[in-house]
Length: 397
Image (cartoon, rainbow, N blue to C red; front, top):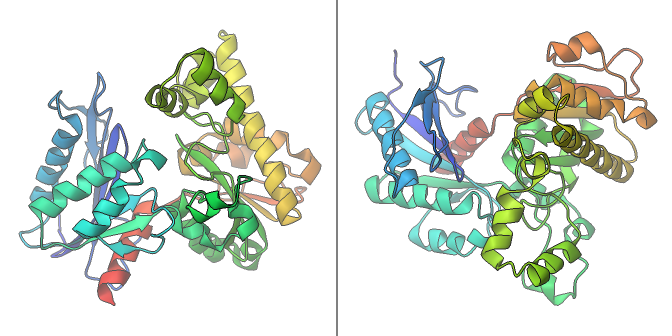
């Protein structure tokens, strides 16, 4: 394999997964696709796997049980050492879920910035601790390689104040309690890709559905965020794989009072035991639930609730936009699950949305029928390229 002399490493760390991609750093803007990518999944669980660009099937990986995430980082550092020439690591870009009320733009990482970001761990407990561990590890092992944090909250800084405010006493706003919005790197990439593919149509009333293990919607006007479903934390909005989405706060108060739930136990319930997994009792993966819904009423119920919550939020954001010109599905479920797309769109007849069944089944770029009042599209996301581009631009200034 012909390896570039210099590479930008992009790391995307989660509670049980670690993804990486290497982009050629020789260009002013990195190529759209990395020259090497890989991922470790199931970290800390009973089955950990590793797969990369040269493997078609994941391989089992045995990690240190006491420090599994650290061991996963060490494995990836070994892989990178084999694929990047000595001194060839130009920069590391990290997808950082939460920057709080201070960090929005891509930022060069220092010990002081890292300390600030540690204080935000309670706002994104599924991701932030592991991202920071990866940053800390690389600052220690590669102190001379610049690292850049790319914040998932950044894209939503264009939303009006009315969309950021929480209906709490005003001093909550002054202390930083507000709706931030997430999946910003994905939506930022969509703003670029949709303009190229759909031209002026994309500058109108565009609604993007980022449906993955985490899920949210973003309403765009002129390709800028004007409203989104996630708020103060990545728990808000849509029902997700293991996260509850929007929930009456009275339920939380009741559980804490009657069930004597600690804050830690409540976080475990809301972040890891709810959503599709919690309702179905089977899986957080819609593919598994679709395969079992005919025989398992809870699988069917979980899917119905999942679709209903998406439809409900699409309706709310469509009202803010004044209609929908372009509806876009992206991320793992949005890009690859034709059944979920069909079920969501079947409930949007009020907006005149109609799918072309064959195009939807083929995951075509445009899946709406000729008689649809709105264009419905499928657009792959590319958060890794977005992060690499930010690092390249920041370090090139």
